[in-house]
Image 1 (tube, rainbow, N blue to C red):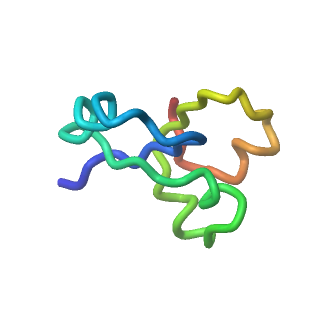
Image 2 (tube, rainbow, N blue to C red):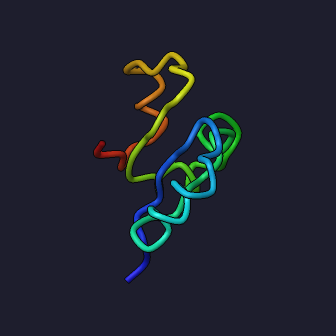
Length: 67
């Protein structure tokens, strides 16, 4: 089974990335804006550090996002 894909707006520091690596795969924020419909459909969750604007229109681009 593949790991959940998590959209990440800013790269985590190495120690955080290592801690999450066994549990999920991070995907660059650009996928939400520029990725194909299939790529966006694979996103399971969103994590933000810089607090970009996330609203209903943004989440509609990620049809399978749960968190």
